[in-house]
Amino acid sequence: MAKITFWEKPGCQGNARQKEILLASGHELEVRNLLTEPWSEEVLAQFFGTRPITEWFNPAHPKVKAGEVAPGNYKREEALRLMVAEPLFIVRPLMQVGNERLAGFDVAQVHNWIGLALDSVGERDPRNCPCVTRTA
Image 1 (cartoon, rainbow, N blue to C red):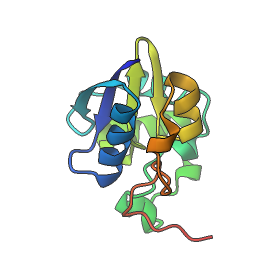
Image 2: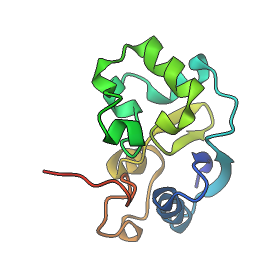
Image 3: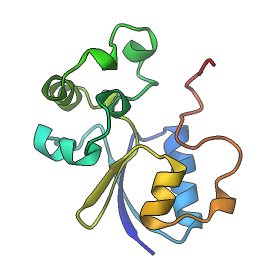
């Protein structure tokens, strides 16, 4: 199985559930604090690849939830600058295996990347923090 560097917000219930799934799938975790990591725009960009900028943002951030920050209004460089200045804006978790990086926890994407014991996932989508309320 994979040795994963896993950047989290300490105390986040969503990240705790994601780590449980990864461990149940036989992976080894090196857990780091997303908020204290000395990010640069260049390094952070490697986690997002070609994904739309709107998917880079943490939907649970109070300014995103309140509509004060609209992820769709940011260009690549602006979004990266904002996230380096305030890492709470970064979607969680960030994960790295070798030189490959991934942002967020889409079950299908993580499963295709490193493999998951899908029976450990459960009913609630582990991509979303339980504190995020979504409407249809």
